[in-house]
Image (cartoon, rainbow, N blue to C red; front, top):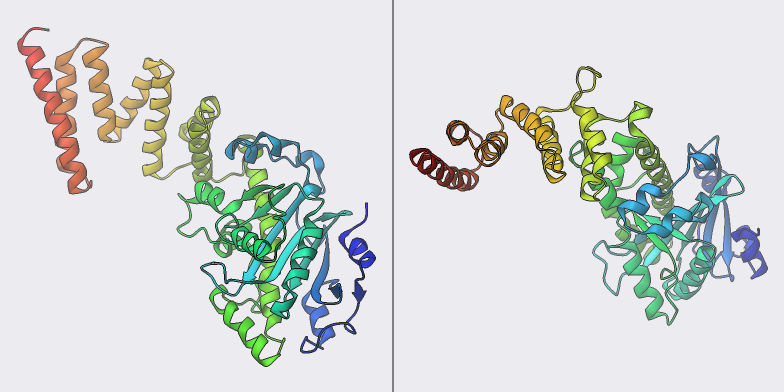
Length: 415
């Protein structure tokens, strides 16, 4: 199958720096040192792009292992069944560098980094807009690259990158090439997977904490990038743009690695034995929200089974939440005995919800208002020493007081 390079050569692409516009960098050796196997080319003699190939020995990925690759988790999470049918070579990873960080119709994407698997290598292309007047050709070149793709993967792309590019296609009178693509935005996925463990779920922090990648000093903070491009347009000095290209390249490569990490951690987390217990809790919650209750039960239970796995521990707050969520699932399934057992554990951990739920069972199922009263009083006593906010304490106190009065009436009436 012809690669992007083959297609663009057929459309008039020329190798080397001889065709690059005035004001573009002349330090070809520096660029080659910065980007392994990279080459500068032009599309239709006007749009410059850098073409880089990474071998799988240089680029850690499971994409070369077809049997290990599946978008099944994303298919369930995004409720998009078509995703399950696509393989690694049908995915394009995308990240943009723009003239503004808040979007808007006047914002230009001056670097568009896109990458995908081709011929057992990761192929990274970075389109660079050296003159705003060349934007149409850049957009056409990007459309060419996307032509064989089925899935787009980004980080905050649904809210930022793609709306900007969509506006640019509209303003240039071109059809939107993203309409035919399934889109996986890894930012909301990362927030759901790692919000309990990481305070920050930026791509840079995920690189460090999850992927264990550290960027070189060549990187540049994102907030500086728009001004660096304006300086380039005004002064014609491309050298600072090398750092922006490095930043963009790392973003695209990290997207691929992050997708890989999520696929690995969600495929069979218990059998692998390597998943962080907090991440397994987050997975359990995701499957609970998806209605996959059997999977959620399995993951919550594993995290709470200290006899079988003594080294597998959760913070106390998540132990409590796991117990309560598991108890609620069993309650929905009509398994009151298992729910009661879990709420008893919650009582042992001084969790108010455990007292309340046990009180409900003793009042309504076992017809024992005296025991229900004892549990309710214990909940009220616990409430007074809890670290809940004043509003939460008032809400709970009102509910518990009402319950206690009802139970006392039942006891006095001999019910």
